[in-house]
Image 1 (cartoon, one colour):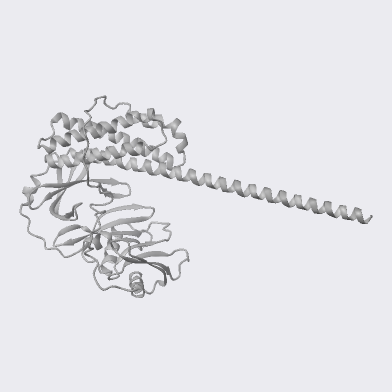
Image 2 (tube, one colour):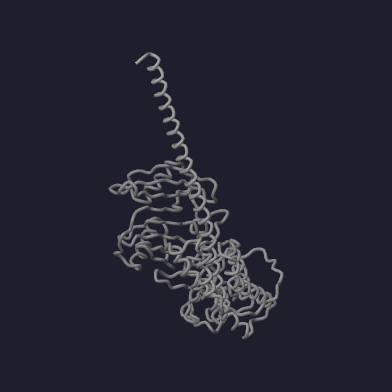
Length: 463
């Protein structure tokens, strides 16, 4: 082969390799771009699904609140309390409508459901104005509220059924356009056609509902009363963490984070334990002042149930007492996934003090504490000067709607949404197979609050 031919052959090889390299680079670039676009699209779809999920679950909560408030309005004994209850029902119905409008279901499908929520809100608003003028419910109005409560129960059941199908993956949000009509119309087909007058709605501030125990989500006070002691540095706070879990269990306390932005300033740590898998760590937050436990989550599986709720309650009480939380009594609980979340309130002079609340999550395989939340206790706890009631138990009981069958009674201090407390009589009673707690002011006989007790397969909650 001549020199010229060798030179041309080398040039051809280089050209082929160059083209091959270019093709490889182009294919790789296209593949990377495609993967990026796919992941970006999947991320957008997930964000959209999360938005729909949030709106849907919020709507379920609001409709559930409407149902609860309607039944509460049936047992209130004073126009003022009826007015407050119906005012909140109106607000919750409006919030339900807002969430409903954010779902990917056509308006014709939602028309009757939206109409029902509008009617509930308008009627509640109208009756609220009537009650604010001191007029009690008429018998016809009472029956109307009973009917609306029945419709709310039906709507709640349909929404819970839809929630189960979505959670189980049997229905996706994209399919609601075709499957939604049957599910929503099942409830709303028989709603009354009566129209209520369109009234100006100009209320501003409203109280919030209680979900997992009486007053468990009370606002954090500006100056937490239960946070006492000296200001601690990081090492001192770490020692408090070791004492909380027990020095014999702790292998290391790491990853300190100082949190100064919250009303209760804290240190947060990651805790590793001896003789357990490395991934089973705990996160705990303690106050910078005094080193009081604020919250704790221990990440470990609980695969079986060996102890009952009563034993778990006692183990939780003993744990709290050993950590310096004296005179705590269990109130309400929720059991699921082989664990129990139990609320404990402070008891002073036979008075249950609900603002001073601690929640424990207890593993039902061995009774170990795997969760702690002390915001309520740290915010409100102090030794109180409890006065003698100015009205008798019998006088307070006479203030209750006679339709309610009273089963038990006691004294309690409850919080308000205005960071104050009220000394009350607490009555537990029953109406139409539903259990309620009614709070009567122990000083002036005013009906202060009503909570509905919900008995679930997993525990006892209040709303």
